[in-house]
Image 1 (cartoon, rainbow, N blue to C red):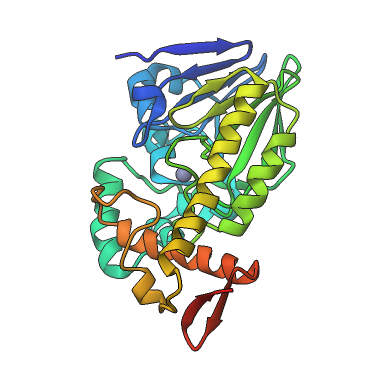
Image 2: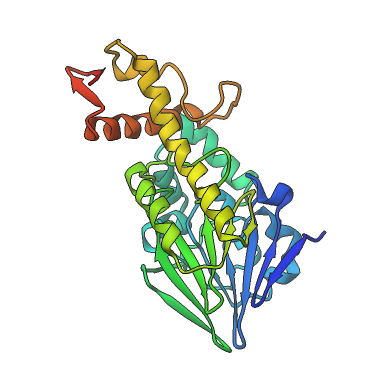
Amino acid sequence: MTAEVINLGPVSVYLGAKSGKYPDGNQVIVRGKEMSVAFDTPLVSLSIAQVLRHVDQVVLGHAHEDHLVGLHLIPEVPVQAPLADLKAVQSEAGLAAHYGYRPQTLAKVMPRMIKDFHYLPRPDATGYADGATWDLGGGVKIRAIHMPGHTSGHTVLLVEPEGIAFIGDIDLSGFGPYYGDATSNLAQFRKSMLAVEHIPAKVWITSHHKAVIRDRDQFLSLLRAFRQKVDDRDTAILDSIGSLAPSFEEIARRRFVYPEDYESDFVPDVERHCLQQHLSGLVQMGRLALREGRYQRT
Ligand SMILES: [Zn+2]
């Protein structure tokens, strides 16, 4: 098996199924004169194992099951992860804490991480900080730009001097931003979605679905639509509150992130965590007041 590949100078993007739509993703390989680096190892990496086996190092943009798949194929290759996501790469308990779902949900979800995504802990993985750089030789460099929110460690990896930015799960998808895990943070995601605009890039690569974007106007338009999804969720929550003064449990009876017909074990936990963050944000913005456990529009 092989994958469609897009070559951008020192960067090759191997497209996952449906341009890397979840559960797949897009595999990025950066080749310098002295070494080559893989950004993440999504499902598609299994179909280009011969390519993956030749990398000298894996640099993870963030830790989530769909980005760690190919690590089991290359146990001898060093792996680096953003410091705040490192524990999720190092142990199963670390990954479970990263998600932070209820024990009964984790009991259903965790076995699938192993069966469907081949999750294999890498206790030898090391961490990198915001601003870290890698010199691949021949003038090819990578720079880490911390863009948290999707996970605490989520990082954009910028290939210089070409200005090719791997923006990971700021994925510009129609689904919108995902901030449903214990490690996620909506307030940070809002800031990152603004900051990503100012990265000095000419090409943007997402982990999922959009894959490679070469036009700045198109990038900005997709980014605007992506940011708008958060505001739309705010609006849907405010509309559902209307003139009532519901409790959290009453608001949480309906969904604001996933379509009603989408079923997966983690959905109830993710919906509640997202809702909690939206409500806190709306209270902070003064659009809702919280009195005696009930939310009222101001
Ligand atoms: Zn992710």
